[in-house]
Amino acid sequence: MSRNAAVARTGSEQALAVYQQLRARPGTAFDEVADRLELSAEERERCRDELVSLGLTAPPAASPELAAPSPTAGVVVEPDVALLRLLRRERDRLQERLSATSRAHTALEALAGPFLRAGATPRGEIEVEIVDDPHRVRRSLADLTDSVRTAAHFMHTGSVRREELPGELTQDRLWAERGVRIRAMYSRRAASVPEMAQHLEERAALGVEVRFASVVPMNMVLADENFALLPTDPHDLSSAAILARGPGLVRSYLALYEYCWTAAAPYGEEEESEKGGDGLSEQQRAALLMLASGIKDEQIAKNLGVSLRTVSRLLSEVMQELGAASRFEAGVKASRLGLLDGEAP
Image (tube, rainbow, N blue to C red; front, side, top):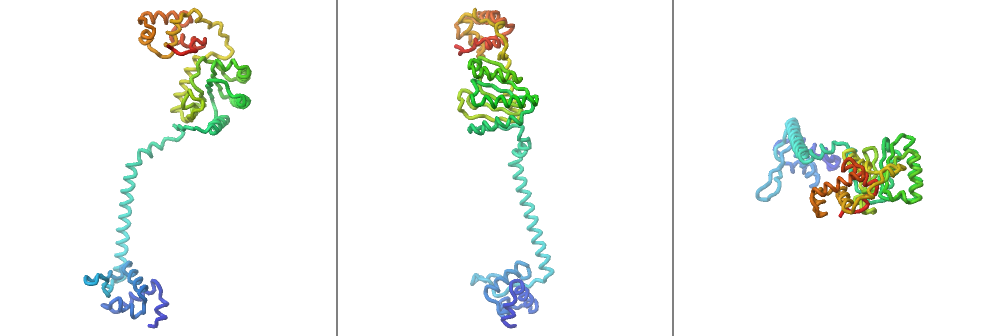
């Protein structure tokens, strides 16, 4: 066979030519056939590897003395036998891959299963985010204008900034047209600012429910039992904000709001009928402050240096002075009258 004919055969064609020669001359060495076909060293290695990978020849045995492949190519395998072996080998590989995949799936399910099941709960159910970017906070509040459907509740520790007043009235009008209930709670000091007093009058005219409290614990915005905005530190106005979404958390904040709302005085309501407390002694005022702070009678008695019986008498006198039927009502009236504007001893 001429060299040109051998060169024309490339790749699989060369391997096929070698295989046919080996089958036609059983016992012939691989290198002998390669020499006859005038294959280069690179070509014969490529043919040898291809025939072994297809299972058409057995891999060459290594010579113990030289630690190198024997010049023989091993046993020539019939095509049908080679095909069956190849299919069996691929089947075994596939089964091994399936087994490895099954093991990986089992391990992944064991490790990540709890997280995946927890993630099945809709993201909107509970979502909390700490935001320290004021612009992001303002954008979140602006988005409420379009998203609120039933109710919006506000709590302000002081006056609203002058540049925000017109936007707040525009928001009130849009919500009033959609039938949204709007409640706003302010510190009693806010009404003493003439500009704020005018603003509150305009809000009330639009249907906003306004109330005043002697003590407002923090700035807070609630909407539809699904959105809450409040500070991470109620005593630091520059602190980062908490954005909470989902009824699981917002309802708890709403319960706090409702408690403060109950103790606040409605806007425009005359307070002469609730005037009282002028006749309270310093000891009675101190007992009232501590009661409103959640201090128990035993500690009040210890702080005042009196007996429990005396504390009960003092609180009964406070209730009588304020016209309250219970200690809770006494605390509500004391808050409305401004008797709690101070710190308990």
